View 1: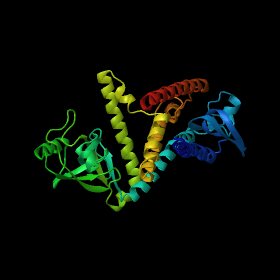
View 2: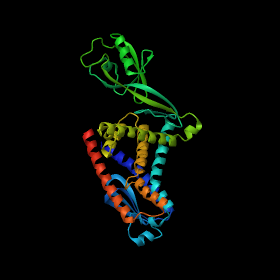
View 3: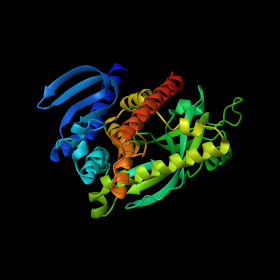
View 4: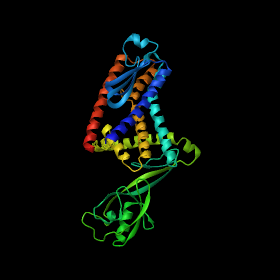
Length: 375
């Protein structure tokens, strides 16, 4: 568990540095003074001045920040200073604000490309709702998976394990759980061959004899099975492969929003927030997922995909038009661009302060939810 926490903190460090570096490098490009580059949120643990910028490490490892001269400032002298963020043209300020999101998206695209390259530019994505992925060849199929294995059952004796996919029953390809149950009943007390595939995609064949009279609460094989629909994605052409990292990032981001929209719709119609709450994880939940991935036999590519997905989610969350997030700051800049009038600095500062308080409260609530869920 300690190793998992350390690895996750290092992962978070990579994501935060890439995001904040986007803000930092564009601010420097436009001549804006960067007061502080912080990892985590205050209170401060350690800080060192590097040039004109204070590099700090803070107690709350929930993100990071770049503090710009003239940002959230009400002093008129500071606002008019040529190195102030507020003194720069609105176009430059928009670039600085969205640069963090752009860096997270590019990091996700780069890592996804590496993973896709290693997997022969093929990927399998579970479909929680029907979705068409663009820029890639897609074939949907239904998988039959083993969810659990009863003790002293034929499946257990044959070495069938949770997570195995059942590909064939003798020579018959399995396309659904009802088909498997029907074949099993028809071959009661007869040895049959099952072709299985484990989560690492290694195939094997086992011989098992379904029971004609299984114990109460168990089936003929003694397994819990379930079906899941997946999209098999194949980047075949050279252009598809060349841009697969960007395409895959866009597709997964759009698909995630589609699924979240479905959950929100279900929550509203049923007046039950469980669908949405179950799809949201905070630091504890994410660390738990990281631990499960690291404990697998071949964790490298799955963990890289996990990092890429975190980076993509960080980009999508930050671009939301919510106060204190990059998207919230972008709203004020777009209003200024359209109206040619800047919102009062005092008003914007209070809006972002309230937004930050709400965000911290949400993080605390999600963290408590994760603790209840996993512990």
